[in-house]
Amino acid sequence: MIPRMARSIILSWGWRRAALAFGAGALGALAMPPFGVFPVLGLSFPVLVWLIDGAAAGGRARTLLAAAVIGWWFGFGYHLAGLWWIGSAFLVEADRFAWLMPAAVVALPAGLALFTALGTAFARLVWRPGAGRLLALGLGLAGAEYLRGTVLTGFPWNLYGAALTQYLWLAQAVSLVGIHGLTLVTVLIFASPCMLGDGPSESRGRLAVPAVAVLALAGLAVFGAWRVATTEIATVDGVRLRIVQPDIPQDERFRPQARDWILDRYAQLSDKAASPERNGIKDITHLIWPESAFPFFLMQDREALTRIANLIPEGTTLITGAARLEAPLPGRRLPRVFNSAYVIDHQGAITSTYDKVHLVPFGEYLPFHERLEAMGLEAITRVQGGFSAGDRRYTIDVPGAPPVGILICYEIIFPGEVTAPDRRPGWLLNVTNDAWFGFTPGPYQHLHQTAVRAIEEGLPVVRAANNGISAVIDPLGRVVRSLPLGARDALDASLPAALPATVFARAGHMPFAVTWLGLLLVVLGRRRKMPRR
Image 1 (cartoon, rainbow, N blue to C red):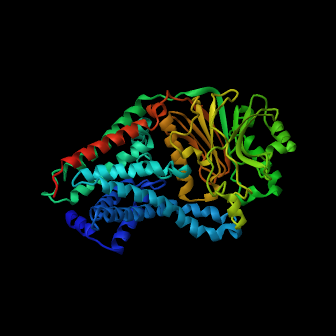
Image 2 (cartoon, helix red, strand yellow; image 1 turned 90 degrees about the horizontal axis):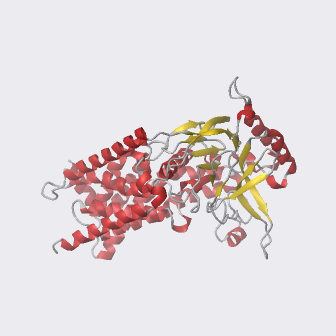
């Protein structure tokens, strides 16, 4: 039955090939959060292998183009099914941006699918019969996913390896090879059932290769179980966190008239008595508010700073997101606006500032903004000229706690780029606002990537989100405490202690690169030994 199905897919033609590729990619999106049905990749990737098998259009150039087209349709289906929720951001101010939603929902997956097309074309270039094509597909897709995460500022969202990281034991491998290394392993494992479509005379590894893949998956689980069972996570003495999740409607965050009631809500949740035995904010050493907490510039509002000073008792430190205004650069008309985070003491004094380094294209700034704004376009955040980027990532000293690395919004999704290169922090703080995306898979996918960074770096992550999901995550990627999406509340927790730097924290993407190049040499070496037909 399976060989017959494989042959029909290989011999498919025209729109049927495109539909099969699109459907296989869309099915694969179910492997991502919040669904986590990772076995579906065992159906998606074999279909992709068989479609590439049939990408023979006469001549090498046409064959590579046919493989690229199949890869594009696969990637388009995968990203459209996995990222449709991004369109929710255009409905926050529907009168201004709703007309852009259809184009954005389609354009982003279409652009990301170009990387998949590049990956399948490369795979076809080094393609060989039998098990060798699994290596070719793994090399092509893993390399393409790495490029997707780095080219044009990068967007490493829903990497294929994320399918396995939703399960604690399977996720621990990223402490060694990172999410890109696990992506390579994921493709190799879940593409292996394609061998069942080969006839007994076509491949000696028809049964052996899928069996090895099952053993590899079991090996990942055994390593993860051992690491979790043998690693003790302590807590940092004397640190008592309170994360405020105010659940402020997204359209209200742009209204200066909402200033007072927003401050009131922060004050009420910050000083909330969590139990009869607790004394509200007096029991807290570190108070954390989410990204862009106010519809005004905090540094320019003395009354707001005074209210904060009156709220915070001695011995308590506030870390909050807030927009920051700076004078225009020489020769420029518009002031510079930064998406920032402040460390504020009990006297209302700002002791440290971090400016977001990795901005969201079209969300926080417009590429070629002068021309696009002249055409009537603007960034969703409605900052004329867009936000300015900070110059570097650095570790910040916080009174009474280990030094912290602050990451604003989607800065947390970039593997290997979440800590300062010169000084390792003792914990990571992600302040974000996912209210743009409502009750969709987006906030769940964002939280999941936060947990993956914790495992990669061996660092705890504290996450403060406007409408959720706020959480404290230990260095093994376990969510210690959390608030559900849409809740208006405050979360009290201890701070987990950091682990020693992981292999990935020390070596970065080097293990992945060495493995990728080693497998490429194996594939090229075996191709040279193949007899010419």
